[in-house]
Image 1 (cartoon, helix red, strand yellow):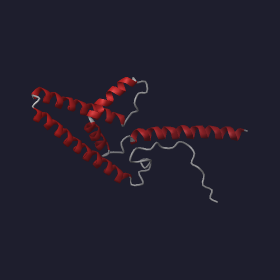
Image 2 (cartoon, rainbow, N blue to C red):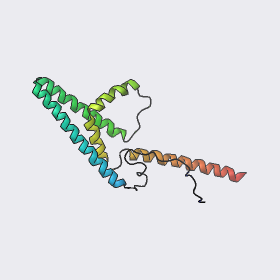
Image 3 (cartoon, rainbow, N blue to C red):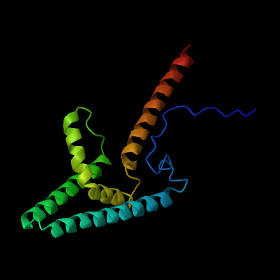
Image 4 (cartoon, helix red, strand yellow):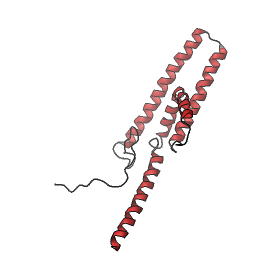
Length: 160
């Protein structure tokens, strides 16, 4: 019979594609970062190709320069907003008090600007697993709280 105990205390939150390898950078962490970055770039390139086909369809349909310009501007704005929102999402949690209907309306813009989100993800993988800094900060704070509670309960136990 082994004396292995269930680990106590806070557990790190897994990150998509990385699990909990971000904690100690083990388990193929560097390879996962490279793979996730390349995957995001390839997906963004394929998405740009699909958008180009759509734009060429507008050109073939001869909808006019104004419509073509509006479509390009709309995609550029949506991609910029999606990039910024995704990038900020790696460093802070969304506001829980945010209006749910505003979040739903923003989802369609983020969907249209998927290339911006993918590029933000790919760029973040150059320095860390996307969201690692935020989760590491939260995990270390949880560990510190746990250690303080554990130390306090240990002091109470010694007095009795």
